[in-house]
Image (cartoon, rainbow, N blue to C red; front, side, top):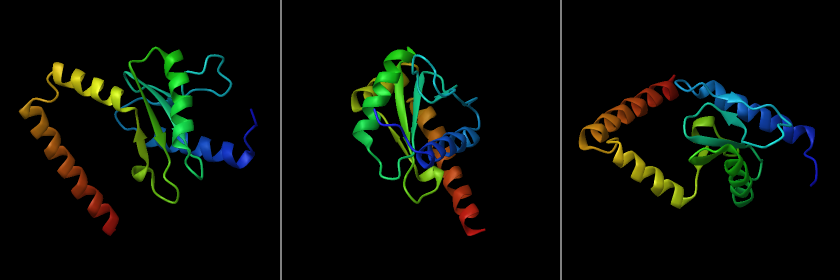
Length: 140
């Protein structure tokens, strides 16, 4: 396997740090490089193995394949790959998971009541509030 250059390493480290800094409400932290059994790039998100990718040209299929290997080692129910979007802000990045895992997660959320009409309405209001706050910040 070819080694990554310093620029790619720095881009990856900076992306991981940006995700950790933006993860209010979750105690995300970077997993040290060279960890023997790769279990992802970030820990602290309940139920998820988190792989962070910041390639200047996103290689999503390769990233997902790598995430699946780490996910297998992690013992977590689901994985998500957080892909940096080239020339865009952190919040415009992509959270990628496989469709079967997505529907498995949705079934679980339904089982625990997180998709009840009351819960959905609460999330809708929160999302609208967040969108309004984002618009105000963009105007500043």
